[in-house]
Length: 582
Image 1 (cartoon, rainbow, N blue to C red):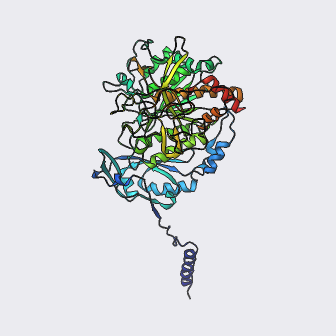
Image 2 (cartoon, rainbow, N blue to C red; image 1 turned 30 degrees about the horizontal axis):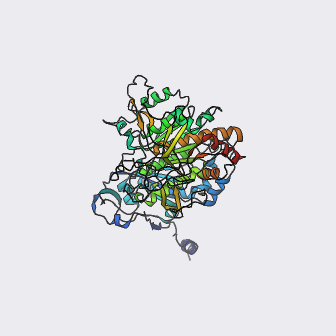
Image 3 (tube, rainbow, N blue to C red; image 1 turned 45 degrees about the vertical axis):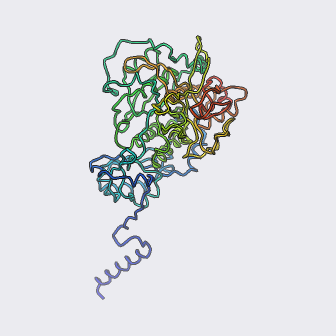
């Protein structure tokens, strides 16, 4: 036998041994990828609706991947003691919480031949993938088509997309491959119609600064009215005006800096307002971002306000952009889990109009904000009363207000006396036009059909004739009618649960400022509010609203489906929280 034959036989034997040990490999050849079909969860009747054409190949799709997270790790992070004000480095935990280096490398290897852009979040739980529809169609072995469903158009894969099995097994949610979910709408009442754009909105572009105007419309609630009625000024008197605290706003429209500057000048604001564009700048200024900034600034005059904003006027999956803003907040606060900072969101859609993938993605981000970053997220409960789907007498609630990781905030009509004292408060509602909501039917509330009741949602009134064992909302409430706002160069009267959410966000920021100074601790998450309600020890942390209804559910003693636990009595809320922390 020649030496050449011996070498050939040896190589053959070695390759045979490899085949026995590694059946999915061949000598010198990588194993072929195994693929798994992805179910996007779009309703069958929607997928069977008429196809009106292909999605243009050049359409840019912002596809987002939410990775599975071990719930034990989330619980461990949630229960880890955090020293208030102490810097932390969550990025050290990213390899445990999110995907491993090896998995990420395999994902990059799959996409790199197509020249696709990838961006992994700091916690390694969220992956942004931007590419053309034609590129995703080739990679995922499908094509994209446009459907006409119940009078609205949406795009989706014509056949279920396929991903490598190793990749698919790590995914909790994938968004951006369709835009089936109804775009989020502002929880901004139509009482602001006189303030809305009557010409082409200029977004965040600067206009020539007008002469200062500090003369609000009569019979509107000013910051000092809300502050005295709800006890915020009692915390001011203790030197807590938001110093060192941040409220993060999630916005799908922009604001005119001249409007904001006029308002801030009138209230002698000492804090800072900044904005961050996510996935592009907003194309319109519709009043929502303006309202949110002014509500927070008026009640916490030394606070830091960061407006994360995107363009809500696109044809893509706007919810993917909303989630990108939540992820940007997570990224920006990975070293800030001891801050006690908060998030305020004043948008939503009826649960029945949401695609499951969008819901899971948002839910994961809210959970990370709560359990990993120890931040409270306030979400407006909606302005169509008990009928968020805008069909009168059709019970429904708004997402993400219904998410158990969000604090859902309803609305009231607050009346104050001549000295700004709280004179009266009833549920905000208006049933004069049952044919059209126009964001004016009132405080959103009811039973979630997506989420079961969390174990922490316990309080007097929770178990009632309407209870179904589901997540019940709202959790709390605040003023949502006749609020003074400066918009498009004029003062006006604005309302909606859009105002109530930032009012509470500012309130908890002030409370946490005080708690950090006096107890070196702070409060966060929806369960905080029920813990305080159940251990008030003679204090009255909430004003119980017992009059009115949201066109279906009546206000009652204790918790109810119109105003939750009630509106802020902030001095007592602080005292109850302080007792709870000690």
